[in-house]
Length: 246
Image 1 (tube, rainbow, N blue to C red):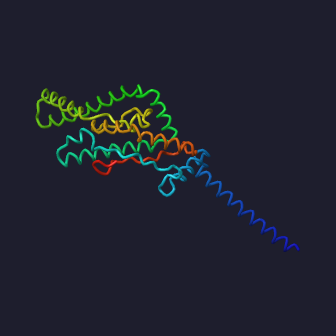
Image 2 (image 1 turned 120 degrees about the vertical axis):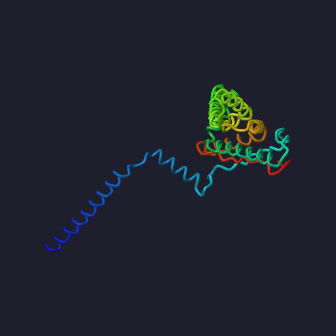
Image 3 (image 1 turned 135 degrees about the vertical axis):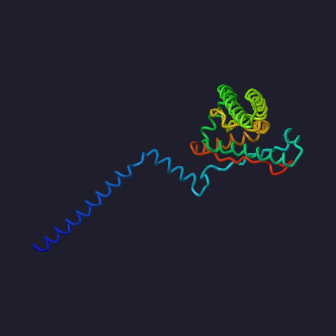
């Protein structure tokens, strides 16, 4: 009986030893990898659910009525295929940045921005930031032109005058871009992101009214009603596929 008891004791001791080693290893892992904050875990889980398979789960994609650049006065004045292609490429690029900016917002944030715009129209803080952005851009352009002229041997006085004139001409063709446009959810994002073709910027800005902006408002409302207020917007903005097509 004593031999059996000894074996049992040894078995229990080995079992306890293995359990102790497991506890030690677990403690060491915990030290190396501290537990994540519950809120962070919840957020990560939600993002995985929303982005499973590369698609936003639960937020239906909204295809906004296509933007038609062919009716703009600027496009109609273009005479060569090269000019028209350049115009359409820039139009498409600006539209893509608008889409990305909107899709980076939650439906709740989009609705808040839209409500603020409906109440106040243009954000009063935008004018100053836009003016500062334009002035800083002009200074950079002017400085680059001046340096280039000086390297070519142009006298300082003449280089300053020429640089200022050229910078003014360049800025006349550019606008400070808000992404997204203030009317399309950018009320709180009033600081310009970059400069772009002023004619195209105006054309896109004037194209939101009507069905396009209504489709965005409806998409945000539907997402909020479905419990996805803190998900991401999922809209598609694109050019009409051909002249005269909608």
